Image (cartoon, helix red, strand yellow):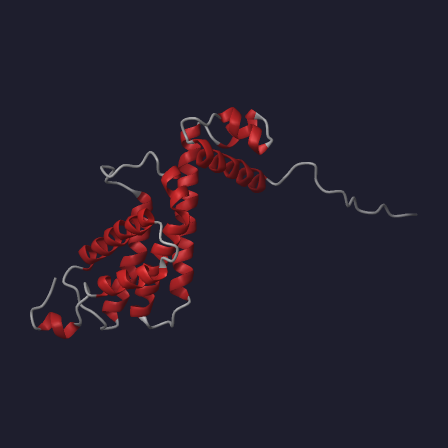
Amino acid sequence: MTLKTADTKPPRTKPAQVRLDELMNAAQTLFLEQGFEATTINDIVARAQVGKGTFYHYFASKNEMLDALAKRYTDYFLERLEQAVDACPADDWAQKLRAWICTSITVYVETYKVHDVVYINHHHHDRSNQAKNAILDQLLAIIESGMDAGLWAPANPRIVGLLIYSGVHGATDEIIAAQATDSLPFARAVADACMRLLPSPSCSDSGLTL
């Protein structure tokens, strides 16, 4: 009896995650090229080379796809920050904080065009911003770990975290507008300024608190 050999032909359909990524990539490219409002679902499925039914299998609307792109962007941003922080020595919380700040700036500079597209529906008056909260929580974890290690002792770590978060993003808009070719020296200067917001325990004991 002869055994049949396994079929080595590639599958005729792509895995669902691959198809979803291609669909989202097509949409993101079109949003960057011609804007969110000007891009239609027909444009997206044509660029992704899929049927319209495939789009509606994953998303109920173009706005829902935009929300998914925003989440993907935030996940990428958080991952880059985590990688930079994890590359620092385990107990060096000052270096971890500097890495977080510098990476926030450099990644934002690299990706601000995507940021501005996927967050087109987000406004400053939106108080419940999940993306901001996730990134802020990551920053606060570093600040609080430094406090536990006795490195610094701010009176209100959350306020310091908010100031650093807002300051980093506001400062990055400045360098983006200036179209600087190298953001790292600027990022290091911002990190130096932010570190001054964290008094040492001795300063806190003497009454020099925030």
